[in-house]
Length: 246
Ligand code: NDP
Image (cartoon, rainbow, N blue to C red; front, side):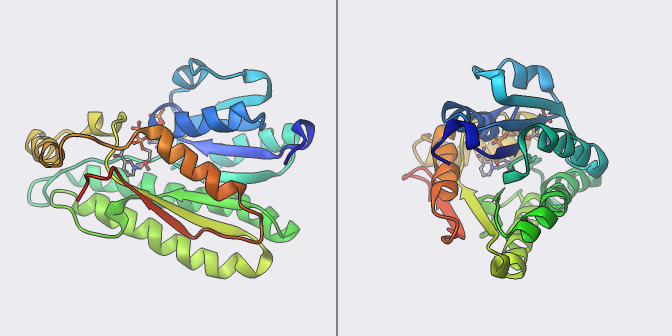
């Protein structure tokens, strides 16, 4: 990994904003070839990156075929994926009494099935060559409850469950599966919430903790730290939140 020419391919989903964009910046600064995925490729192309070794593809992670095609295209150029960061996700807050089930489906499809899609695409070659890493972006909502987050909590508990299960399945093949579980951070995540009262409750909760949230760069540093450990060391999970978050 030290020699710039020999650095392996890093694939990041949800690279168009928030955590994904910060993760892309860190690996780009270290000269890794990257495949950056999101539905809004214009936003990825506008990031302050050196695009020499970067491929940008429009991929909806719920569509396994386009996801797979993009990875194949990148692997032809840069060799096998050594790290997949399954970061794409949506958090549509709402109370189960009145939330539109279409929002539950969008969260399950993106946050759970999108992660499984990514893992099914990259794991065969990782198991085969006995190397490689997958880092799944979960949340503290993947470990504890938050009111008005029922479906999101379900999706992120799902991410925790599938990641740990698959880790046990591939650990004997020298493949690492890790989880990052962040607390509240200012990204575009909340901008998609349609339930005003759930959004209001969330903002009151944040204010009650002093209003300071996690800087997205800290999550990116966490991902990099996990990856930079020797392949024989698997940091299974890191929980990270602003100190004042309860
Ligand atoms: P953002 O909304 O800023 O970023 C989400 C990213 O996911 C975007 O790049 C978006 O790209 C992408 N995305 C969403 N749906 C799809 C899809 N169907 N296919 C492909 N890409 C998709 O939020 P964050 O950076 O905050 O979120 C990143 C991850 O971190 C998520 O999994 C989220 O659940 C998790 N998280 C966030 C926390 C926070 O407080 N911010 C706390 C804990 C976890 P595009 O729209 O271009 O497709």
